[in-house]
Length: 195
Image 1 (tube, rainbow, N blue to C red):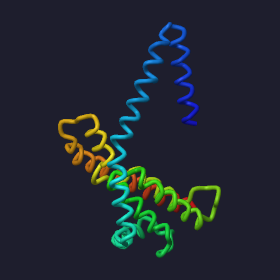
Image 2: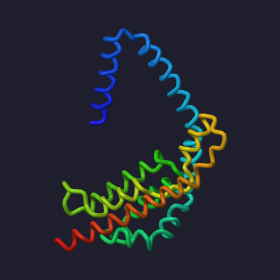
Image 3: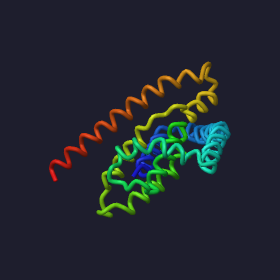
Image 4: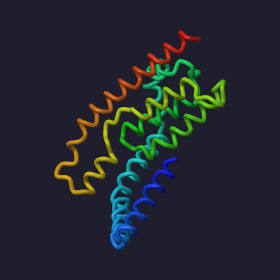
């Protein structure tokens, strides 16, 4: 759906440029924006590779398993419908750890694996289960302790102090997490009363 929206917007822009005689602007935009996009990717890549590598080392060393055990009491309360030793809880922990480091790209594989495991225990295969919805809320509104990607972007664009975003990011993501989990809890509770 998003692809269609982008295609529509690009098409409207091209047609408008042709009608107004500004085709040179499109050519210049395409060439300069492609170059800017490549520069941005090359600036972000080392940071993402570094933190993804650190996350992989943490996974291979068992640190993520320890993190999962540390989060286990919280996750068991957030996901009461998931059996205690299910793999989904480990993947959810990995996803949370990656999101805490601000690594959405590294969090995605763990999130997909968690959703697959949650689908395995889902009673209605054509409908998202309660744990799936809770995980989606937690993944979307999760706490970020180190906004790595944003820091890399600020460094790439020569910010005078790229680190000043850390405290506001922690505060904003903590608020969104609390609000999301609270709303999810009340909706779950209301739905159980109606059943």
